[in-house]
Length: 477
Ligand code: ADP
Ligand code: MG
Image (cartoon, rainbow, N blue to C red):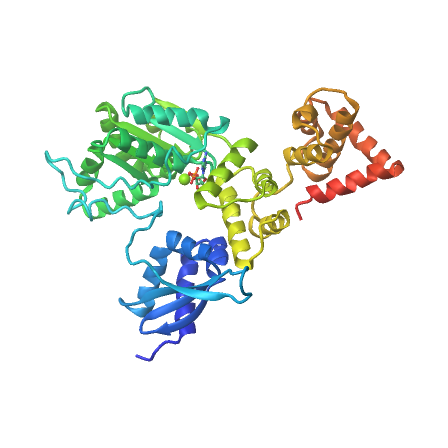
């Protein structure tokens, strides 16, 4: 076998990695890596900072290991060379070498980790356990606990219902508990949190988290292998069954059918069901009526997009976890720009940290603006009325509540008019909606405000200065 060169090995690794991570992650975490050495099945890669190294080890170690072994055989190893930032002494970066940890201890086991019920714990996954209580790996991600789930108006009902269920699984009226809401709003996180809390309060209970997709696959597999009954029995002995994204069952009649039987059995025996879905039961298409009616037996609680305060709190918690501090204006900018998806909000924060670590730049508002532009393309990135109001109020040093109030104080009226003007210019909101956000005014008031601002800009130089300052501050580009 001819020997592969360093570049070949790394480029083969990259092409596998590319297929296994999102494009954003690939660009952020893998493109900056340089392969530097290949010797005796040890590949050394250079990463731009300690932070990079830690992030890779925490999030991608399983993938990296698999890839390296595939390329270099079973003794394949990975070593890191970290460029240390040594601003104080010399300008030259130097490297340290850290071998990758050998334990498979990944702090953050991927949530989509395939369920291999049994492999480790029971010999045959679907064997009927008899009297002995089997140990089932719950498939819970310890990072998704209640402790790390920030409470806000947007999730209060779902969170407290989840908490109640965790205290008394099967013993509340919330059975099933159905959590629904749009993508990236915390359904999976909350579902895990409930499971973790139950394990804490009731260690003897068998808890299982499974995605609907996995459930479906396992079912199909059991049909193929002709052990459907084992499949059903396995699920019927679970004390707390958490099924994520049940909308996936839509149009899958046989899976719905088997789930229906499992559901009934568990429910009748006082076992807890926790389900999540991207829509409320009434809007689920392709779902059998009898199943839908059961979804409604317990409580359906929704997750809404979090308020600005909650978004900031989520970012702050995330920063705390990563041990990072960011200027307040940067945190606010992120929170104001990404409004509808917590996953993207977190992604933006992480990309920003990575960018700054990569370029050895400190994290400034400018960097945040550039980064958001580059990475967060598909989010609805229109400036929000809230953000405009915030920038205007900061600029004139007014509390935002005043702007939203009905007060007619002169300086507030002017700030309010300016906020209306920018909202009209920079958002797609209707005049009526803008008015509603600015002290409950009607559309005519907003129109009048826009005219007034235009007039003043023509006649008043100082005023024109305000507007152009503000324009720069508000602009996302
Ligand atoms: P969904 O399943 O609804 O698509 P996830 O549960 O995967 O969303 O959440 C996406 C990301 O946002 C996760 O990293 C999660 O930890 C985080 N997240 C969502 N809501 C909150 C919250 N209230 N507090 C802290 N993190 C949150
Ligand atoms: Mg999810």
